[in-house]
Amino acid sequence: MALTLVTGGTGHLGREIVDRLIRDGHRVRLFARSPEARSDVEWTRGDLATGAGLRDALRDVDTVINAATYSPIARRGGIRPVDFFSSPSAVDVEGTERLLSLCQEQSVRHFLHVSIVGLDEATLPYARVKLAGEQLVRASALSWSVVRAMPFYYLLDKMLAGLAWLPLWPMPTTPFNPVDASDVADHVVACAFDGARGERAEIGGPEDLSVAALAGQYRDARGLHRKILPIPMSETRARRMGFVVSQGVRGRLAWADWLRRQYPGARHAA
Image (tube, rainbow, N blue to C red; front, side, top):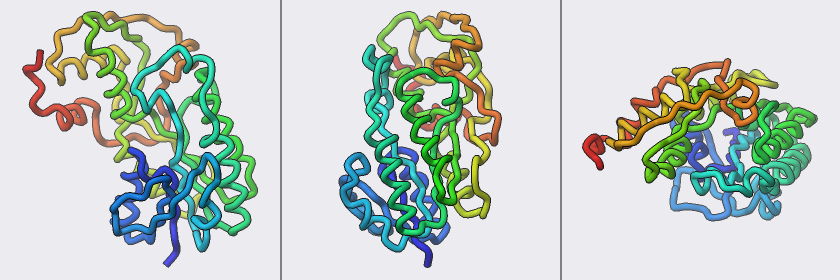
């Protein structure tokens, strides 16, 4: 049976991807710094940022799904001043370059890279790092696919949770369609094995809502009493900040439904 290697397989999206691969009967190997107790996959210990263990991880691999990334903003759930000036590139650029080179040595048949919608106009350093890594994939001699996804609901949840202490939330009125990671995983796995290659359809959530409206739904789901101040934003500035609407396929799970699952008992919170 052909072997699929997943990088970033212990992350939020990666876990969803692995679940679907196992469900569909694929043989799966995970490349991770800290293997977990999951017994239905093979584990290879290593680090994409340094390349440690990577050659062994690629042995006999047919397909690679590269879901690894390093975003300080996502890890902490908020933006700090440093994020406007720099973002680490060891995983997303140098790690991707190293992974591509070794995949060519090992004659990997398909390299699928998970990326982000709207990178071409976004100006945050993390977005520029992600774009640089994606461009390496596109320039590769490998048989590759790139799947761009909108930001995930769980990340929006973390960002808004960091504002919960404020009595007033200034929020852009620009449209946005974040997506559930489970819907992205479905799309990624389908693209990995449907035989097509190259730039694939990007994926976003099922609804186009303003950031202010998304924040309002979050506030109501949490039972918070906060005032939202809508802030107009030009399309150019919105795109530079990554506030875009995906023009590709649409996920199924709406933000309000995701919130109901996350906060079933929070309606009467303070």
